[in-house]
Length: 212
Image 1 (tube, rainbow, N blue to C red):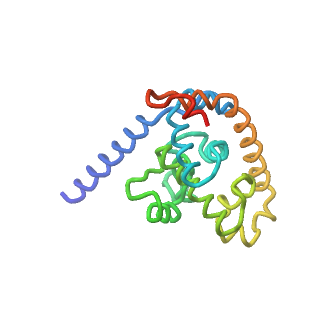
Image 2 (tube, rainbow, N blue to C red):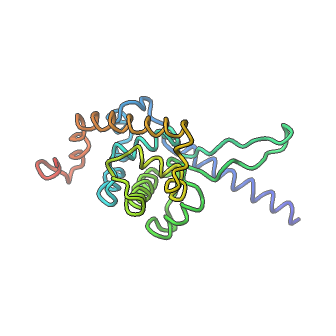
Image 3 (cartoon, rainbow, N blue to C red):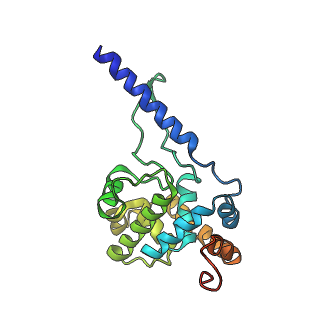
């Protein structure tokens, strides 16, 4: 009987997770244009702007990170290998959600800033997490919040790895960090052309108070 109940609970849990995944927004169609991303999901602009105001990481940098980490897929995880082709094995890491935050550092974020109800599968919390993490990199490693390449290196390698310079022997990681930087500048230039659309779209927002 106990075994049957455990199986039933597992089925229910799997169903709940699948339902949450189905309710998540689809990834944007045009991920190379930040204006189009925000036109599809205008509330994402609000979340990224709130994170920028709280922690200091520019909107374009946050979204370039999320593009690199998950391609804007809310429930993505590292692939699960199969032992002998038939036995599901352990994933390579606990990374999950838009920002691909791993369990230990997500726990630190929950305790320090996010709270127990923060979810890695919600863009509001993913952007806030990236802002929080980059603020920590700025304070501990002295990385400027205007330096997306090194912010990403610290994000990927962790504070200890970054301080040891482990990325210097990893040309693949360096190349990815440069790609994140290039996408940041592209997103930033695009956002300058369309940001007014998102700043003043709510009925309680009106020019000129929402234009800056």
